[in-house]
Length: 519
Image (cartoon, rainbow, N blue to C red; front, side, top):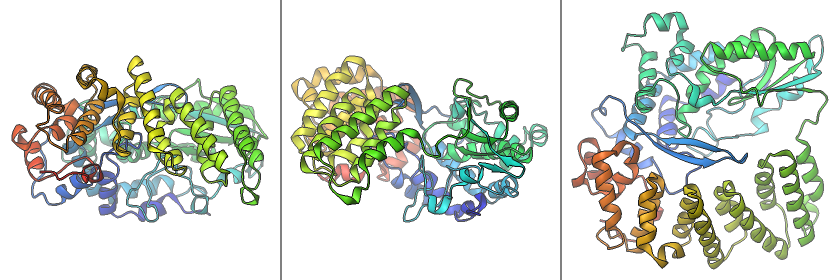
């Protein structure tokens, strides 16, 4: 048997859990990689007292998914997030016991994406993590039952999983609903402390946990492993990738029963199935997705030769055709990532850069891939990246696509060029940014002009943004804390913000600042 669920949990100490969640799990991967919580983590280690209690709002931002729909994600108040991480650390032994109880009798590990200790890394969660050397492939074994073969596959997922999680349901999962409800007023109970820390981070609301912070992935597992145990004990055999289920059954009737039983188990925690994505598929079907076979067939053995221009072009064309036909634009992501690892001619590499940059303008959800999978491996000229970023900027302004604007600004910062949209009329551009009331766009713009002005916060181009930061600090600090905190001096801040700023803590990667001497 492959490693059990609890084996992965036991590899994580309480200190490693705390560091992984706080230092490396604070900012969502979807953000431009200019932010870090490592200095904040180090600052917290040296504190003699805890941060103040009470609830706070959070920074919300929108990202576009590869299915063409937006997802709202969050950056929590750092003090409230630290308190949650501290509660999870303090009660890690109890949480691990919970996981052991829920998964002890399972012959395969149901949950496929969860927190884990990654080799050579200090973070403990990565979306879509797959390593078949340690994870195995239980799907092949699930094709068979003790009394026959699987004939149907049920594919299901939870409707808006994280935004639907009821914080009170965490104690329900940890100690049982009866005990939790009986003791719900006991603020000293360890499970209630976790519940309170969740709601405090979510402006006092009990419905919903933030998408983005890695703590949310741990909290969801506390609940969903209970659901897994109940269904496993009823004889259902399936795998789960966060909130996506693949269940292998012997008959269509059993498939229908699984859907009903799953919905009932989820309902106990105020969660619901997404019926639009729930379907029953008759077996056999390909173990791997059909489109993967199609694309792999076009490249053959990558070690046997170099992919020529025409082969690369056909590969990209086919990926696009499959994406359009299926409505699954993750296929394009897969194609871009696959091409990076293949041997290609110089003309083939040039083709990739041109076509993928064009695709990223049309499909902005590809922008987070550009640096790692296009610009760096193919050594794209800075001037070409500038032209690309200028186009992104022009198009994004027309439709108020703030995510794309942030990436256009990020590329200008990363590759050190002047963004034409800012250079032509910086005052007009800043007015647009200020009117957007988008925290991430504000902070990215502030970083841009600070770098352009030698990190001089008194520069003419920086002063208007500093003024806005002061106004927001006085009126809406919670929802704009990252911008306000970085833009203002410690003397303009108060309470915990002032102390942290005075200590020199920044949430901006040091590499962004190394070009200049910073006071």
